[in-house]
Image 1 (cartoon, helix red, strand yellow):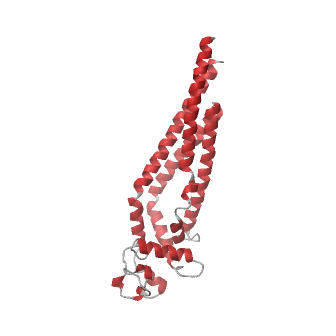
Image 2 (image 1 turned 45 degrees about the vertical axis):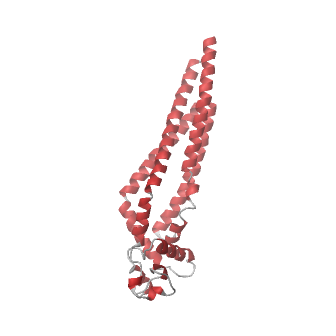
Image 3 (image 1 turned 180 degrees about the vertical axis):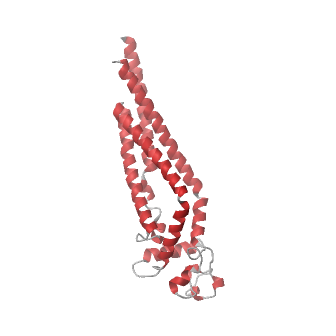
Length: 247
């Protein structure tokens, strides 16, 4: 009987420690994957891709989806934390199953992104060119400003070439933001004074250069999820052993 009490006390202490660890992992999992922090970042991209276009709609749907997924993961994290503190087998098992499902869905999403990367490039360039037609028009200040910022900062002109603007103006001219040295109406001058690099490729190259940070974030998220899976299943098995011991 004394041995049983001692074992029960030890298991309670271990369970408390495990619960704290599980709570911490649950909170980190939720905070790493909360989509709300990503919503304010792509404002410039939202300006270039207006919602009426396919990729624009996909982008807005994607950001809203991130918010929804982040909120769900926060709820799942709280579920795992409560399950760890209470040593509740149903809650721990539910947390494990839901986290495992999300982990597999993330892997599937990454695979689909790489499989359909060429199609994404095609539709993105097509919609960006459609967006050029709205440049400088009434009610499209955000798109106009976004293109001016991109062309100035990335020293580029047009989507695939500076000649993309010729179709917009129906003339051999570009916006003043395409000029090597900015001045009023410089887009009407000699083409030798314009940037000629394609903006789509320039922005894409910049994103590729910063992929290291994105991959580090993804690996940290995956590691946190794996730790959450391991600790939740460990605590679940521990709770089963305790219940079996006193059965």
